[in-house]
Image 1 (cartoon, rainbow, N blue to C red):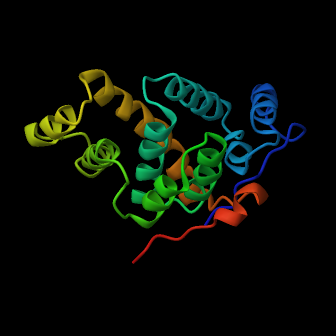
Image 2 (cartoon, rainbow, N blue to C red):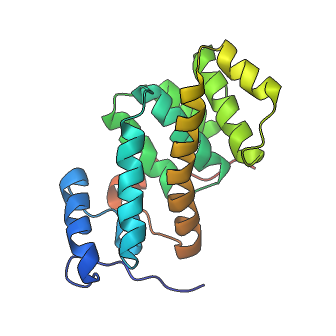
Length: 184
């Protein structure tokens, strides 16, 4: 596999330096994923913009975590599952929700479970969801806006999950306590 450079503000391409500063301000450090993405400034910029746009969706913190972690777990992302476990803690998401997502067990709330089920349908069917998938999602209290916002979250996670697979991004120290491996 190709070794990807973990850039810092000195080694990064000029167009990535301010983006890495933004990451450092937001996270208190430069996450390994961002250090790798810095090789292609447009990728890091796009990822940061998608992340911000997803934070601004109509979903609450529990729902955002369900979407992110459902996708991370489905994609078996060794980096993002632990990273988002730490992020969920900072967002005051309960450990019951985080553990259910990591362990692929039932969520403690039926609406959140409907969100996970719909998110999985979007991922597994590559967007070709059927009327039953949509009806179940809408019956749980979600709207058409939420369908589109799930796809926004998926867009962000495809970037990070796929890059982490290809680059074999090492876990950040902050995420090491939450190391994870997909069951089965």
